[in-house]
Length: 472
View (cartoon, rainbow, N blue to C red):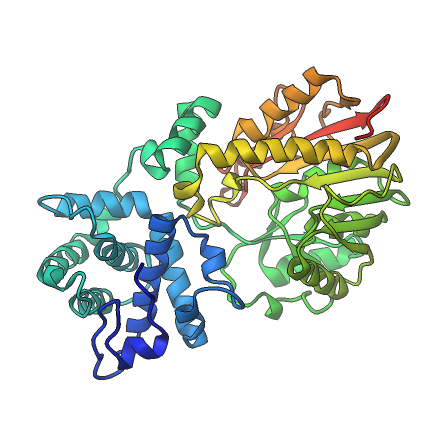
């Protein structure tokens, strides 16, 4: 496997990836080369973009870049992956024949250049020239430099028409996911999902329970936010640094997708109740419950994620007991009035924010996750008092991890009684109650007719009551 070059090597040394001395530091070249690397690794290695961009343990060549270039490299990669169906359709329309099968690096470079030309506010000449430079300075692709130059210049010339291409819905996902989503939700909803995940999502905020109605009204104007029917604040404008927004330092809000705020409501009135939030980090549901007066125990096995949760609670001036543990090994006994379990899942409901998921989820992974989710539900049931409530949540839009799992538990008669949702419980989101009486949202759903009410992450949640013997 080729060794990825460091930032210094991109400019100074010849190395195993074929980069020649750049001569002088051309502005933006390194960011675009690294953006291509990110796309190539996601598509060829099924790598997670979040993991590659992690500030502590991510791709070394990315971490070595200046902050501005790191942000640019990630933005380019995210756009290339989010708009990949349109980009591939555009490139294919300009190529006389397919690229060689082992030309992943060349294709990644063309995709990130096309992302900039078609969808980003960058000078087209810079996108073309720097991409051609990157191709010509890599021994794996330099013979294709004339081709890259011709294709990208034609792309720039026809930018308006090519950016409006409408790919087939099936081309927005890998073959497994395309077939599974069509089977689970039908072709019309598949189309709606494919369209929704190509739209950059807005930032949603949940306002703390201690914030007065008067202050909420002021915040709405200060933040330039639309208020959704479930009381989520949806920002109308892009934000580079959340810490600079009104109310951040005062702990008046936290970032939480509108759909992600719905499952905690399924516990009803929680003031004074002992509630466990399992797989809690980064803490959106913990904050909701603590803000509503619950006595929360937040459990997560990741020390790093728990550190973030602790910092979030401190900013919000909220309290919870934090337990760093694997919930399958943690045995507190039946001490809680209620438990909310946000189980590990395929995260297919978050493709608007994490577009690489559309290309790297496979059946074996989903089946393994469904088995783990079932095991976690049964472990959670042993932590709840008789007659207590369990809410099972995930951000998958695959029925194997949601509706099918609920049906299996109901059939198994394992000491859990399914409690259906009723109209009005989800605060303006009755549309999300499915035929099973569970919560189901999809990326193409909307809260209302206003433009800003379109779009949310995909979630599934169902509610159980413990009955009989449910100890594991």
